[in-house]
Image (cartoon, rainbow, N blue to C red):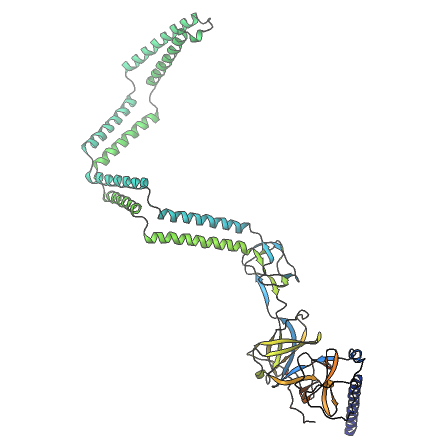
Length: 552
C-alpha cells in the first residue's frame, strides 16, 4: 500500500514537471528562444534581447501577465478579512421638534453643508423674539443706570425728603393750638348739622317757605295771563311776555322744591352721613390730642431715611455692584439670544462631511427629541480592513507599517495600505489566539472597492534592495541561467535573476534590472493561498518566507 502511494506521487510529479516544461517551451518558442540552448551564460541582471519575431506582439496578447512585487527582509504576515468603512458619521439632532422635511434618502451622495433634515421652526422663532425683547429690556436698564440723573427727578426726590422730614417734625412736636381749635370747630359743626337734621325745620321757616311758594304761584299765573294775550302773534317766542313766563316758571319750581324738602323728614342715609361726620371729626381731634407712638415715630424716620437714600442714589449714580449686576443681566440676555438663534439654525440638520447616506431614521411629521441620530453618513473613500493576526506574528506588526491589499473581486490589482491600530487584547477561537489588526487603505484608486468585499492584507517589513516576488511559473532556465520574462513597451524581455526562496506560488528573486510596474509572463491561481512551498498560512493568519534555496 505504501509503495503504491509512492508510485502515485512520483507519477504526479512527473506530470507536473512535464506540464511546466511544456509551458516554458511554448513561451520561449513564441520569442525564438530554446529551452535546451547551450550557449554562454548570462550575468544576473542583464536583459536578454529575444530573437526577432514579427508576430511576437500578437502572440504576447494571448498570454497571462502578473505584476511583480517587492520582497521584504522580514517574515511577511498575511491575513484575510472584509473591507469596511473606516468611520460612520451619525448626524444627531441638537434640538427637538416636528420634522417638516426629509431632504435625503438612503444612497444619496451629499456634500458638506447639504440639508439633511428640517424641523418646524415656529416655536424656535418665538424663542428668538422673546430673547431679543429680554436683551432690549436689560440694555435699557443698564443704559438708565449709566445715564446722569434727570434734574426733575432730583427735584422730586428733594421734595419727598422735605415732606418726610416735616412729617417727622410734626409728630415729634405735637399739634399746635390752631390745629386743635380747628379740629374742635369741625366737631362742633358736625354735631350741629346732625342736630339740625334730627329736629327738622322750625314753624317760622316753614311759614316763610310756604309764603314764598304762594307768591311764586301768583307770579306764574300773572305771567301766564300776559303771555296768553299775545300768544296769537307769530313772534310770541321772542316777546317779553314769553321771557317773563319762563322766569316765573323757574321761580315757582324752585320754591316748590325748597318747601317740599323742608317739610319732608330727613332720610336714614342723611342722618347716617351726618353721624359719620361727627365720628370722623372726633377721631381727628383725638389724634391731635394723643401723643405719637414709637411705631409711628419709627415709620416716619424710616420714610426720611428712604427719601435720603433715593436722593443720594440720584446724585451720585449707581454703585459698582449694581452696575455690574446690570451688565451681567445684559450679557446673560445676549447669550440667551445667541442660544435661541443657534437653536433656530440647528433646526436645519446639515451634512458635516461629504459622503453617502447610509440610513435615515426619521420621517416627515414625526415628533423627535434632541439627541436622536436622524441620519448616518459615511465617506466611501475612507476604507479599512480588520484582520486577525496570530499571536506568534503580532509582534512583527506595528502602527504605521505598510501593507499591500488584494481584493478577490479585483484580480491583479494591489492596493496600498497602512496599519492604523493593533488591538491590545486578543480573541480566542477553538484555542487559537489572534489579535485584531486594523489596516487603513491609503491607495488613491478606491472607486471600485466596496465595503464588505473579501480582501487579503500582506503586512510588509523593510524592503530589500533589488529583491522581488515573481510568479514561480514565470521563471525558466535559459542558457544556464534563471530568467523571468517581463513585458516592456509591448514586447517580452527576459531578465536574468537569482532565486532566493519561495512563498506559495511566488518566488523571491534578486535582480537590479527589475522595477516597479513590471508585468511578468506568468500567473498565480489565487492571492488567498492555503499553503505554499516553503511557507504556510493557516488559521493563525501568517505567511512566513522560507530560507533561500541552494544556488544553481
